[in-house]
Image 1 (tube, rainbow, N blue to C red):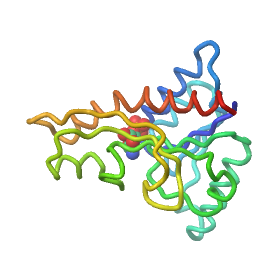
Image 2 (image 1 turned 30 degrees about the vertical axis):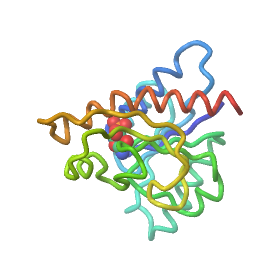
Image 3 (image 1 turned 180 degrees about the vertical axis):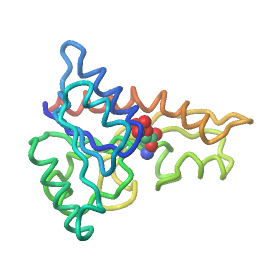
Image 4 (image 1 turned 120 degrees about the vertical axis):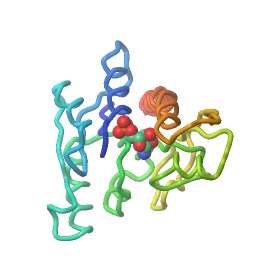
Length: 187
Ligand code: GRF
């Protein structure tokens, strides 16, 4: 089952998806990786010989044009599922119209708590003792879509944002792989 992955960052979730895809009897294939900037994570795709493309907002006249370009770049690979793996932009109406119900995102907090770009920092600042990660269906809101899977992670007394995020990523990666496998097996 063809899957397109969108990233903005280091791509550790992408790396986990690629590693699982290489295993025998995997239910999906990553057919392209698209980023909104020169994300370091694009190297994972290039190393695996997978098409990697940057569609940057600044290369387009406005947000709507970027949304259309991003949608065209994704649609060119005809994915059954679109996975946002550390993609730091909201997806606009064109992508939602083209792939509605088939776009998922991973978030480093237990939604609906701590949505937005700083889920780890916000959870830490609030003083919660347990946080975690969520894999959700993407809708037009900010981290408001249907929750598909979650895992809890304890917050430690001496935690920093970096340390906590690392421990969240360690459970987030296998969780994302599990959900992508499940969704692509069912299609
Ligand atoms: C992940 O924790 C994701 O949930 C968050 O940013 C991180 C991206 O990590 N939005 P990576 O780029 O997959 O390494």
